[in-house]
Length: 144
Length: 113
Image (tube, rainbow over all chains, first blue to last red; front, side, top):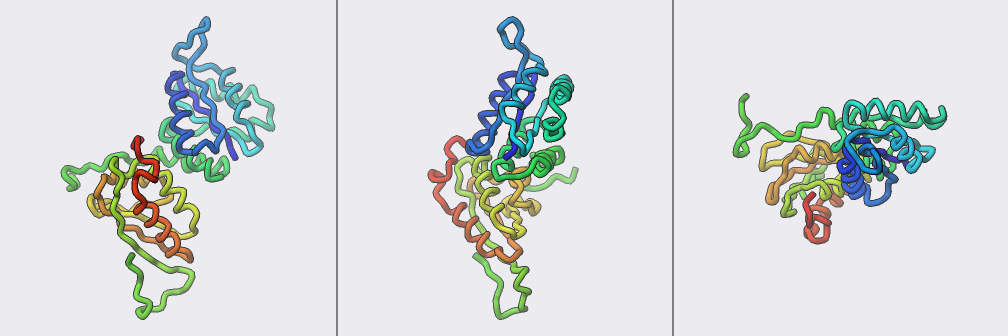
């Protein structure tokens, strides 16, 4: 079963995602958060490459690890984290294009059902195109 | 559950089609955890399974996708039309109907996350 890593500028967001995603996987999936930056023993906003590496190691299995990230330096730090891994591990890690929250929910569900790394990422990335609200008023679709 | 009239056109055995109508009973509507359970049950079957929210005139969505289930925007009392096609379509719909008919208190819906 693949592992999941959640990377966010905010420690609270990443930790909260672990809680939410764990419920979608009913505890069946290894997941780790790498949120925030440790600055003189206090967490601040930011991303930390070494904490991402550590998170990958904590959830590592031969089936691979899917990283879900928010934006900006989260992407760059995740890329650098993969560069620090040995080749055989790096080749089994994927940084998802999925939006962080929706991607984490979908990925946890499908990882828990035994999906492969590619299958789980494909399901998560469907969130890029998923509408949340229909443009309706009182059950009737607007024309515009 | 509506089942095709067996006396009508003989359908090929590998492509059975069945449909059912269920009412959403969860007080918070078809929320995240309830949808998780729907996806898990539906994914155990080979059949293609779709749902349409008749109360909203929604489009048909794939029941094996939690993202699409969310697009039903199904509130308590909304009526969903389930359709399944495939060799195990009948069993799939039986299982889904049982899930929807289960009292909400037994299907982990209390927080409605």
